[in-house]
Length: 375
Image 1 (tube, helix red, strand yellow):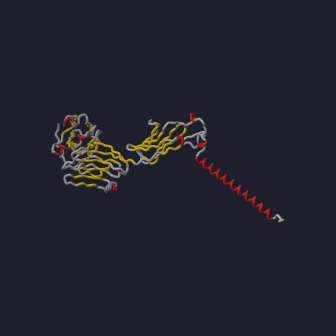
Image 2 (cartoon, helix red, strand yellow):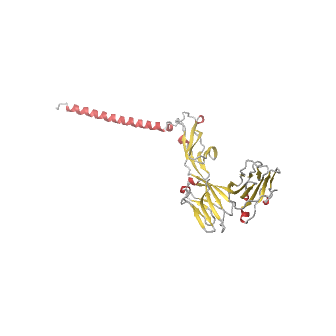
Image 3 (cartoon, one colour):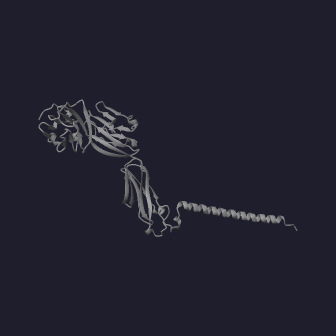
């Protein structure tokens, strides 16, 4: 094994890499192919070893001249066993099924190239909150260490939004970043470092990262749900059924909601799910049809839900589904109004004609009395 001098712990150029626990990550050597006389070595230094000034540990190497490729899986208590893969063309290193004990610094060294990578392994957690409510992202700490530094970062840009420096006893909240979307909404717990977001908005949706010197990094995916509207049930039929027997016909219904996201719309018969439709897009409308018999006595309901809340609308079949054998519901609402207005008009016209006839008769009688000679 050829010995190459390792990089210092605090190398000038360090490439930061973030990965969720359980996933895999590839550290690219930057080479398209190795030279014939090249030797590639990968070394690792975890955070605790770094704090105590320990040296890097060799975990894999390729000797092109000797045509050998070695992976040292048993070092460091076997934490890399069955997890390391070397690319025999480029020398890039892949770590599979990564865990928090694999977080730290990785050094790549060849005869011509030196690179250093800092891997942060996140414990991924998902949190949901209703818009307007408060939510706390828990650090998991009971108390911050005296020389620790807690940082909270947000979004793909990894924007620093809050931090605690225990050494200087400073707490800072950066409320004006990202167009002020966090203004007057962030609270840091001085003892635990947990972050609370009050009066949440849709713009607070996204990824929050917690960094600490002593605990594993945590990545929170915060989903902010809008308040759900009540579903609307309506009839698809423009008129009532002409059949007097409900067993030979059915009523077409539809349940609808508007401007929703990340929800599921469902029809239930009692407690049994009949059908459902889900959407993850933003501001979309949903409709779900249902066919029922005209005199069905079962209980039906349309339910709109997301992971934290739901809205239910119960179906009243007698209101939306009826046959023409029922004289009360034989006509549509528009036709019923027209008939009622026409009936009123006919009644008014009849009264007018009757009054006119009475007045005409009295006028004729008065005229006859004037032209009759007195006795």
